Structure formats: structure tokens, C-alpha cells
Length: 100
Length: 135
Image (cartoon, rainbow over the protein chains, first blue to last red):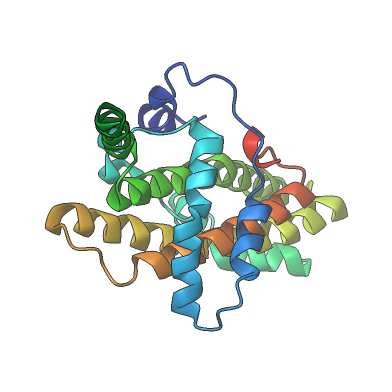
């Protein structure tokens, strides 16, 4: 697990113990099951159901919001990371097509 | 009777003080999203790098090429995920600084959920390691 993740998340687990088995699919299904057609209302239902909160609990045994540093949570995309290593999208596409 | 009501009110207040606020929950969501993202992305980047290196050395196989195709699909989803995640973190940061919930916070969180779902499906197909709680 990356060091940065250790700092942000793992350190906050404390003695929370074993990670619970919680399915993201069930959380997403609860959103899809809502009969509301308005996307914003559906999204509100998702937040109300605490779907990502379920994920948070599953992954970190309940994080203390006061100890979460948002500045540490920004991420780089895989394309950015690959580009930093000198691998460009075009090269990947060429390899997939069968070129060297 | 009055003593019982007072006791119940004290218990309710204690419970309410423990419950995370909406902002607190959004921060937890951002951290969870980060956790999922950081568990999958380094594996994808590392495998793509290894296959590209093999290609450059002229030792790539058809199996490698097929895997690169699937990894590249997952990479595109993770690109989208990274963008949505960063927007969500930015929105929650604004929320924390101003005390005002941004209009797009809920929509972004919903979008992240869909992307997590797609990314984990593909990651499982590729037999990548995913967080224990999400297997």
C-alpha cells in the first residue's frame, strides 16, 4: 500500500480491527433501485443511503473526518503517471494494434 | 417519569454528537474513494509499463498484447475516475472552507460510485488485487 495512503487512511484505522465484507454493488444497486427519475434526486438518494460511507467503513473501519487532510487526497491519473515514465498513449495504442 | 425523559434526552444528545456531519461524511467518502483508486491504479500503471518495456525489447507475446488491451480499457476508466475524484475532493475542500455545500458534491459522489463499480469489475476480470472489503 502506498506510503501516502498509509498516512491518510491506514493510520486512522486505529484498533478498528478486521475489514468488514461490504459489497459496493449492493450500495450501487440501492441507488439504481430508486424509482426517482431525476438524476439529481437519485444522486441525493445515494448520498442519503451513505453508499460511499459504506465503502469508507468497509475499507477503513470508520475514518475520523477531523483527521482527514483533503490536500492529501488528490490523485494523478494513470495516463499522467505513464507519461511521467515516458510512455505515451500513442505507443500503447500502437502496441495493441500489433506494432512494435 | 421526568427523570426518564431527561435521561432519554441526554442519550439522544450524546448519540447526535457522535454522528458525523454531512461534511464529515463527504470527507470520509473522499478518503474511501482515494483508497479504492490507490489500491488499483499503481497495479495498472506497473503492468502497462512492464508490457511496454517488453515491447520495446522485442519480447512481447500475443498474451501480453491482449492483456495490454484490457489494461488500457481499465486505464481509461481510471482516468475518468481520477478526474471525478479530484473534482469531488475540490468540492469538499470548498465546502470545508466556506461552510456551504457545493451544488455538484452529490452528483460527483454518485459518478464516483459508478466508476468504482466499473473499475472494480474490470480489475477483477484482470485478477488484480482489490481491497479486501470490496471483493
